[in-house]
Length: 450
Image (cartoon, rainbow, N blue to C red; front, side, top):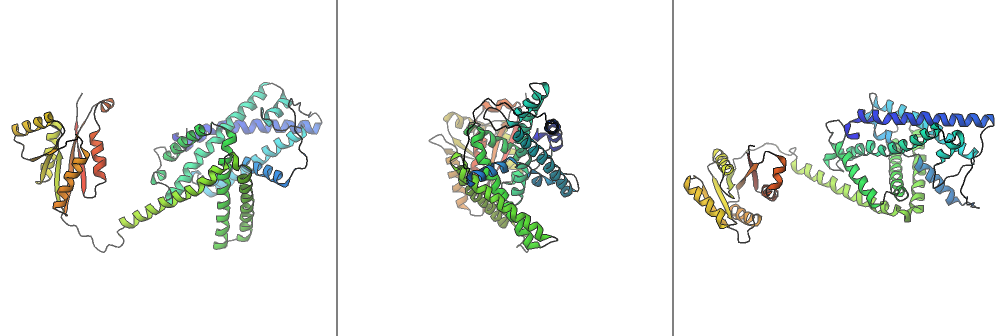
């Protein structure tokens, strides 16, 4: 759905979202009405509770960190500013404000009802389902709320697909990720980021057995690391620019940095043995990879830059065209004709893999009196790449200024599945020549008919 485009996926995902918000607001409203009218009854639970006495500060901090994890996702608006209509920043602020109000109403409404109804979390059922059953019984509306809960959890996973590709775009724009992540697809979405996330998420599901309990620590440590860094970055920005009301803004970000860092430490310690150690190790590795990628692009830009050139001198280079002749057919004739058209310095080379192929080439070469020198190179181990490299090395060694162009004849079948019936020798040759400094290649295709 995300590959279909931002507008198309947004419309499809908005319907369940509005459905969820309206149904939950109705449930909270009815619950409050019953509370104020004195008809709200405590829920009947069918499981034993364990009472813990003397809750420690760490216990409370862990509960605080878990609550913070429940609030993540709302920050996705910040990375999605570019997807808004103009004025993008104002529309993003309005959206963030609306989300904060809705989240507060739903979060505190459900919390209030669960406290007044004496509901505690269960491994078998959600708090929402217990509240709904106590308010409405096993009626149609109860099952509607259950369906809404399922759909909203499904859509919550989509936050990553909406936001991660844009985050990759920002990193790629600053040359910390491959340039492929910068490209928009034909539907104006970052297709490469979406597909990469899909494959990575699938791999995580397999490695961790699709266990939410095991995956949450990976997510929580990563997200609060980014929160801490972004809040600290904004604090530094306020002190550097000192724009209007910068002290108040800096204070907000300082508090955000402290709170995010506190949550990060609590989660890292309390969830360390449950999987948090993996992301703690991976983050430095990712940073190392990002720096290596950035270093490559910096080096590339320096070597390709023309800023230091005062004048371009176009010099005439010496070229030698070498036509590979594995056998003799119409595709070979087309390749030879192409080479002769562009240069007088043309050599044909045949690597002797079997006596029969060599005899066939020599027979037709003599029959048609081909006006190109033919070299026969012996290949005792019936391989192609090693003898070709040795042959090219000898030619390039004779003249250090010579540029060699290898002509590779290839025939193209009419139907796609026919490719599987033939050796992909041309691909191997092109891959090998691609990494040779003074050698280039030209592929000459001979298209087959039906």
